[in-house]
Image: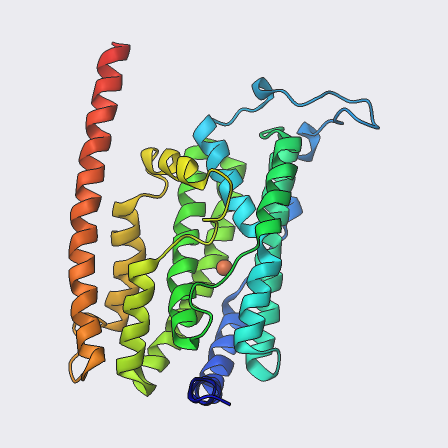
Amino acid sequence: MTADDRTTMALLLDLEPVVETNLNRHLELAKEWFPHEYIPWTQGTDFDGILNGEAWAPEQSKLSEVARTSLIVNLLTEDNLPSYHHEIATMFGRDGAWGHWVHRWTAEEGRHGIAIRDYLLTTRAVDPIALERARMTHMSTGFENDHDASILHSIAYVAFQELATRVSHRNTGKISEDPICEQMLTLIALDQNLHMVFYRNLLHAAFELSPDLTTRAVTDVVRTFQMPGHGIENFSRKSVQIAMAGVYDLRIHHDEVLMPVLRKLGVLDRTGLSGDGEKARQELADHLAELDRQATRFSERREAIRARAAKHQA
Ligand SMILES: [Fe+2]
């Protein structure tokens, strides 16, 4: 067993009571909900193929192109659940409170993909063949935790990632202009929020146990953060489209994802850090300042592009 393995084992054991408390808290707060209630089944019709129904055509969709892109990205992200399960089950284990959480979390994430896919197919909002091919490609690539050697990095990543997906689902609902779709995505966003709180509370406990190492982990994760769906084909092009629509952009990432978690944990104001912990805290502050500048530049560029487009249309 290496020193790193021993550190991981010790952390898992030290954090287990915190996992148990927060798992119980989660089970009390989580409200049961049913994906099938949010699907307008009467809008559904047979597709071509063995049922000889109607083939999909773009004009059948009532959603805007960007709402479709955003829903597809969110769905493909959820589709990679087997890989996420593998990553956290390998890291956290399948025993005791950790295992109970891993399985419960997986079951809750599972309903997100079920709900979104049923909605998209029933309302004919997406090309079902393109969607299936994209799912095959995406899942064949799988997902790998960027920080699979460190439990602290892994906890920090999921705390930010759950909030990022919460915001992404909620804002996708807003631009869908379909009240049913918006209600469904609001419930998914609520699940993601509870997941974020669970991991954020764990991160809080990690700061108490090991402030310097946890500050380093948070800094590394913030500096290298990628959305969980970054492996989706043409992700860059899709994420620009999503950012241009204001569903998820740098300003949102900085103000509504990174800062709320960091503020709640008091990471930037932390005193008493030593050595690399203090160095990491300063690196984090510098990185956030730069991200803030980039976010402003992006928003200004977007405004200019929108103004030009509006002028062109007039
Ligand atoms: Fe989640």
